Amino acid sequence: MRVSRLSLAVAAVLAGGLATGARAAPPGGPEAGIGPVTKLPLPRYASLKTDRVNLREGPSKDHRTLWVFQRAGLPVEIVGEFETWRRIRDSEGTEGWVLHSLLSGRRTAIVNAGPDKGVEKAAVSLRAKADDGADDEAKLQTGVIGSVKSCTGTWCRLIVALPNKRDVDGYIRQNRLWGVYPNEVVE
Image (cartoon, rainbow, N blue to C red; front, top):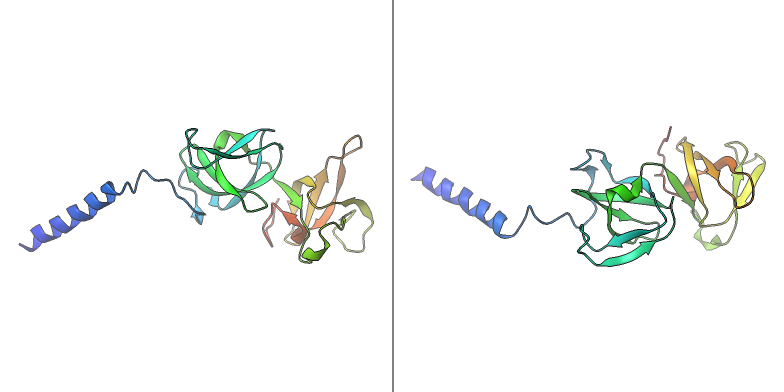
């Protein structure tokens, strides 16, 4: 008698899970840990591969387009995975789904206002060395995107492509970038 009650209880739980579509629904919010598809860490940073990427409401082309990104190299944070789709978040907190083939593992970062948010328009120094006293290689405005070459946990080496000029290579405080985690080491 006890076995049959246990069997009924297991059958009821399984039936309830199937009835609610537990397997069919993709994760809605940010996951933490390891991605179920790629087995890579979640969350993690990536960048957009092309100049036109549709951000969708859900993980299929049948879902409504919420936004169209138009900047290759834009850093995004991957916060979820479902089959060939990745749930991403941009620097302003907007979330949605994109095809994995539109993302690159190339690390980029966007210059932000940093801890003193009151100076949104202030230029940020890109230094010749990882030292606050080093000469400036350039002054970067909030919103400038650069390629992350390395980070120590405090400073990042960033290469910025300037229009009609040479690329600028220098160091910027890590807390002035969106696209790298605080204290993250990038090699």
